[in-house]
Image (cartoon, rainbow, N blue to C red; front, side, top):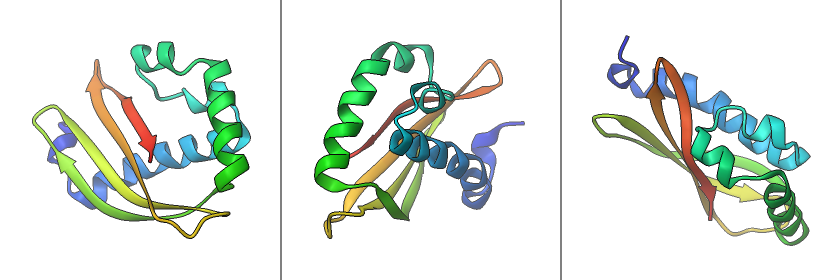
Length: 116
């Protein structure tokens, strides 16, 4: 099945649990959980030490992730990017969260993700 032909709601049923896991693992500073769905390249970039450093820094100033609100699903021929407005517990500002997912050898992989 070509997951890129699914409806936005069906794609979100797949992508939301992946993003939930990223957010939860970031809050818990759990590297193994955080990189669970990452591509090999992403795993090489997001080391345990780097994740811990980044999580402690944002948690100190911004707090923890709270709600997120869908902005949109962007499809290309080979991948999907999903964007949300994201909020933190210590800030009233709106942030942009996104995840970029491709399918390789039948497996969905996160090839990029961030909150800025």
